[in-house]
Amino acid sequence: QVQVVQSGGGSVQAGGSLRLACTVSERTVYNNVIAWFRQAPGKEREFVAADHWSDQFYSAAVADRFVVSRDNAKNTVNLQMNSLKSEDAALYYCAARGSPGPGDVGLKSNYDIWGQGTQVTVSS
Image (cartoon, rainbow, N blue to C red; front, side, top):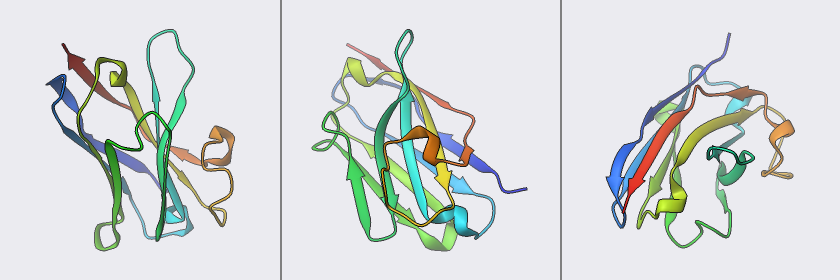
């Protein structure tokens, strides 16, 4: 069974940086589109960024601060988060989609497999 495993995250002061990693357990079609979503307490889960091979997508809230990149050799997509703000604090989820992309990368129902979630805390 294909799994998505997340790593990274933690606590940082505002203005600092953190890196998240999302690894798909096997080289399968589920590597087609890999995305990051986040959910803060009391809020809906929202799209953050996605990678579809040579194309990257970002929400307006993070476009000038976050960078998503893919390491094909490791079946891993990384999310480098810079200039973190208090509003970036949330539980971050990685999601993998097997169908051809990119399509609507921000639509949660388009994703087949979800990671376990990683907490990101930003202190001011």
